Structures are given as C-alpha cells and as structure tokens.
Image (tube, rainbow, N blue to C red):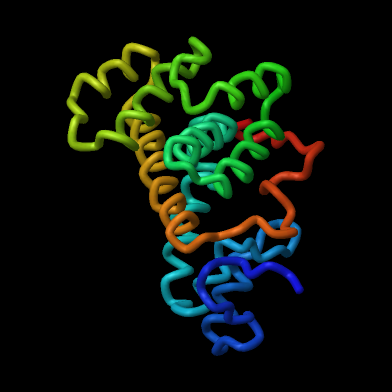
Length: 198
C-alpha cells in the first residue's frame, strides 16, 4: 500500500465536488501530474486557484524579468532555510535543469542555505535569508544592497515575492507532512533548459 501524500486523510480528486476537481485539474503540471503538495487542497478546493495562480505568476509567467533559474534558486534557498525537503527537491531540480553550468549549479545547491556561496547571487540569497528568518529586522538598506548589485526595483519586487511565496509553500508542505512519494520531481524534464528567462 502506498504511503499517504500527507498527514491529512486523503481525498482523491475523483471523490471531490466538480469545482474542486476542476481546480485540481488546472493545477496539474506539464506532464499531467498532480503533485502531492496540491492534494490536500481537495479539502478546500476554492483555495487552490489563488494559491496556484500566484505560484505560476511568479515562477512561470513570461512577464517576470528575473531569470527562471534565479527564481528557482530563491525557492530552494527558502526551502533549505525552513527545512522543507519537499520544496528543496522540486526547486533544486528545477534550478539544475535551468542552469547552463551544471557543475556550478550543483556546488551552489550543496552550499545552501549559506548565502555567500557564489558572488553573483550572494546578495540575493542574503536578502532571501534575512527575509525568511528575520522579517522584522528588514530595513531599507537591504534593498539598497540589491540595487548596488544592479537589480532594479521591479526585480527586487520579484525576489521579494518569490521568497515570500515560497515561505508560504514551505509551511504548507512541512505543516501538513507532504511527502514526495513516487511523483516526478521538478517542473522541467531532466534535459530541458527553457529559452525564456532561463
């Protein structure tokens, strides 16, 4: 017998009402998979659309200007900081799939949650670490450091949104005991590197 997807009792999509089934179907990944992270939403299907919509707007919308691999690394950093193995597995796999230099990407992931592992992304990860662990300590100078690194305010907003949203998802996964089970890991195929924002 398969291990349950979470600590909650499982509601299979086929046993949910029509609106909830529709929301679950809309949240399926590119391979048609419903990730275990989304299965508990069968209990309150009306919450899934807004949550998945924000996720897709941050990580998969072409209007987002930061490279997708940077957004995936932000998510992996938050997952590492919060002890969310589920999120680290998925977003770490995405970061690797989107990175042109796989050896460098492996080294960066291996160093998480340290923020100083790579000069190019260290200021971003330092901001993410502080926001994740000490949000009340944030000050305007934290944004100035990102500006000094060449990021514009729109990109800083994207960093903020990715870190804040991943903190939410990490708490969904860890708070409900979401397990990987036998689901495919990551959004991208192992040999896929996307052209837009890669």
